[in-house]
Length: 552
Image: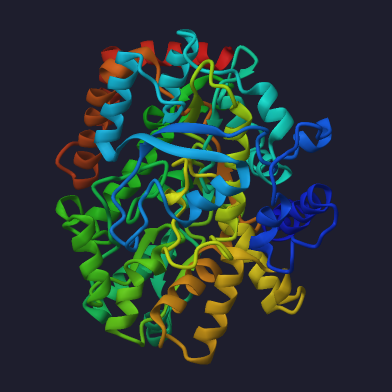
């Protein structure tokens, strides 16, 4: 099964590489993290066969230096003697591949975006850097970057290829221009975009309330928590909808009504439409407006920050809100520290008439590692990515001894996950708990989750870090692994030419209109005026551009 790859095929595939390149000398060992290392302990000889030279983990034939434009936040946790450029992870991959990694420059956040723009303007490119889709197209059209098709097809590891396959073709297609793979796309974990309903289960039990399934259940719970526990209503966010991480967002209330704001989708007739301007979105806004007026939603949600919402959760003043699978890492870890009786459970709710949760999907890829045109060893870039994926799946096990593990400390700041990463790991751990698999089958993060589960089971909530990891995966991610969701994928996640000029103003118009409708400061029919303005102020032109891009 696809979900077993990260925890099962990983060791087997790399062990196979070890046997072929080490002559069966046994260096692969029993530690799965040592498999890439054991696979290639020496440099390839000039007389090596083509099969050996195509080894996805084998060292390049002659030393090469890769200069990198690095998106790097300054990690103050690195110990003395280690830097973002030179640490256990970079040294490990360097030794295995006969490659030297040198950061041409480092920047972070908006500074990185600005640095990439300046680099493109100057034409002084590092060997590799991460760009967005528009820059990928721009650099391709200008002939600035390498076609990676042949190198990728020849050197990509089965593990990384399967990770790309987990996006159902989206990732590689998004990096393909005129039939050529022009960059290595990142892979985001799709679970981050799927909000669950987090509820104080101890309050439900105390008040004799049933676990939530429908929107009516959510409304009843919010009212009961306010009346009986002195809590605020259902928490909300100024970011009403976001196709990605969105704590306290109302995303799944919209999707209950088959409304998908901020997404380009196809309507029932197959026509491309922006989800924020559909009749279904007006219906969802009407329901949210009603809920707000009835006191179901926190009256101050439109002016509160995320930190203020977290304070309410931690202090026991909030007991119901929407959020992603990782909420136990923050702020729920602080909630149980404050009150060990707090029991937070995640639910798939509100469910539609078919008994499933409608939810949107984020773009599997939105960043691309590009290689400078004329770079002598593009295969070294592909092989580095192979190592980075495997190392991250194993969380640096067997490699990181002194430095704290973070994938951002590897040579390329390109997230290479699996689209089903969190759900597959949660499923694998649950199978071990249920006695359907051996604990020895778990590796990396999945093994860590299982150990956290055992530790928390023995002493519930005594080790907050263990509780957080076990609860995030087994209470948060696990429900996302089943068939209880209808997942909506957008047809377009990129940016068109007109978007560059007008999207910010259109987004501002949308956010203000939606908030005013929910708060009741404007009538529901102001939605129709919003749609007219959106279309006339650039939306119609953008829609045509999106249709054109999709048709390519």
